[in-house]
Structure formats: C-alpha cells, structure tokens
Length: 148
Image (cartoon, rainbow, N blue to C red):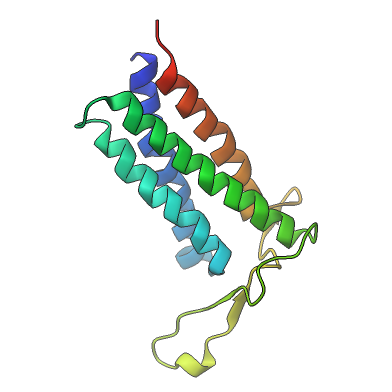
C-alpha cells in the first residue's frame, strides 16, 4: 500500500477506533462524557466522513488531509480539556453535561469537565486523545501530502 493509501486507511480507522473506545468507556464502564468530551468526538465523526470521501472523491489527498486536520482538531480540543482537568487553566464556565437518564431526568447528575473520571499513568482520556490524535493527525496529513 502506498503512502496516500495508508493515509486514507488511517483517516478512517483512527477516529473509528477512538470513538469506539469512547463509547466502550461510556457504555461499558460508566465514564459518561462531559460537554468538552463531546466536543472532541465531533471532529472524529467528521474525519470518518472525510476519510470515506477520500475513497470516492477526487483528489483523494485533499479529502484525506482534511480528515487528518479534523483529527488534529480533536486532539487540540483534547489538549485544552486535559489542561482544564489538570488545573493548568480555567475551563469554559458552566462546562458540564447531564448524564442522560430517560426514566428520571431530574436525577441525572452533571458530568464536570474539570475532573478526570479516569487516568492511566496520570494521563486522562482527554490527554490520551491529545496524544493519539495529535500524532496520528499529523502523520495522516504528512502521508497525504507525500509525493514520490
């Protein structure tokens, strides 16, 4: 597979894997997303669409690079969110999302953006999104731009 082909595959697989992990965390482990977590998901949805468009639209490098930029955008949002969680800077005021409980909406707790619900080696999920999306998004853009 050539570099643009690798970039196209990564442009679909990386955001799909990250979104899959987010949904497993949410529904499998009860780590419900805050508002800023949702902000990180939206560019990944766009990246999947752009990555798939690269398989059918011309020129594929442009669509692939746009998918890579969307992934980078999610990573930047994740970096900002991680900084809020670590207390490095102030977050968006009022940043909280209700945990959806269709049986009793009044009992739904708010999920705060400034508290990391889970960490591994001191890195929150937002921090991992920053690292993974930053590296993979930059790699996708570089591979899409590479010409022999």
